[in-house]
Image 1 (cartoon, rainbow, N blue to C red):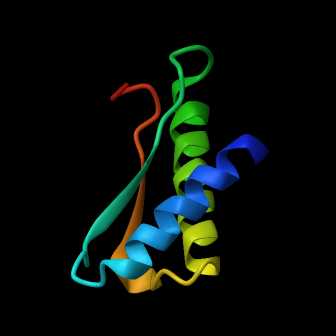
Image 2 (image 1 turned 60 degrees about the vertical axis):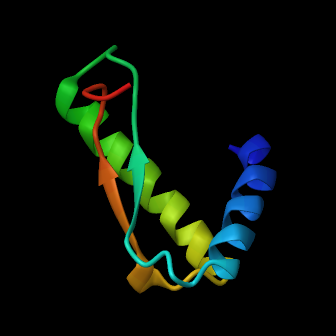
Length: 74
C-alpha cells in the first residue's frame, strides 16, 4: 500500500547501512477469511512485492528471502 512506502524506504536505508545483516526473511500474512490456498498465495505475493521494493531501493537480493504464511502466523 502507498502508505507503507515511507516505512519501507526507512527499512531499506537501515539495511543498506547494515551490510552484516545477510539473511533476512520478508514475511507476508493475511487474515483468515476466504479460501486458505488463496490466502497462502496472496501472502507470498505480498512478501515478494516487499522484497522487490527493497531490492529496487538498493538492498541486495541475495540478502533477502520471501515467505508467505497466510493466516498461520499473525
